Image 1 (cartoon, rainbow, N blue to C red):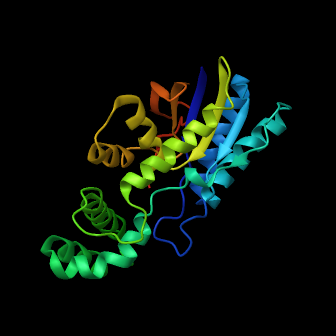
Image 2 (image 1 turned 90 degrees about the horizontal axis):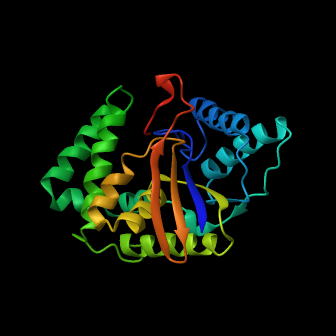
Image 3 (image 1 turned 180 degrees about the vertical axis):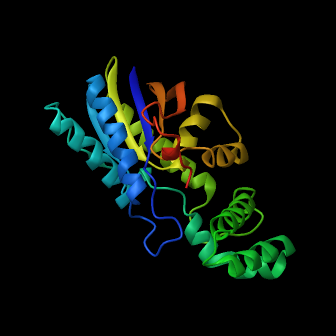
Length: 239
């Protein structure tokens, strides 16, 4: 049985030109996690990362804390299967047609356009994102060649299967990924329906840890969305 800790990446650069880069606050979040684990002398047998810069950089910062403490840090293995779901591509390709056909999407898009450059932009973008991804998961439109939600879940569960093959009894594994794969692990552990899984992904904090016991294809929940290393409440973010 393996203990798999899934870490959502630290805060990225939401609404910036390159979202995939960690924000200054995100760098601080990752450092807090690394220092906490190093102080606890947490032993890890294997480290895996999704392919995005935000995944890899979060792992690098945590690894640097281990190096400073003189503790072993396994070389991270990058698994593309731990990438996030393709919501950005869905929105880019299908927002114009969805806004044309659906009044609520048109209204939310209008609010976002007029909120750009203001403090309301993040909230407006979040509302539009949730509306479109909910329609996508409910299969209310044909997403064509873009990876479907079901295919995304299948991909991520396959990656957890690969990770678990590295484990023997009480092997400790960490996966640096995103909110979506964290929610898929919860789906596997709790048998959640698709829409509840999506909604759960919106609750995952930046740089939060969720722990699972894994045996074969079975995953059981130990903890979810924990950030005990954030002593300053200002470090707790969701986007």
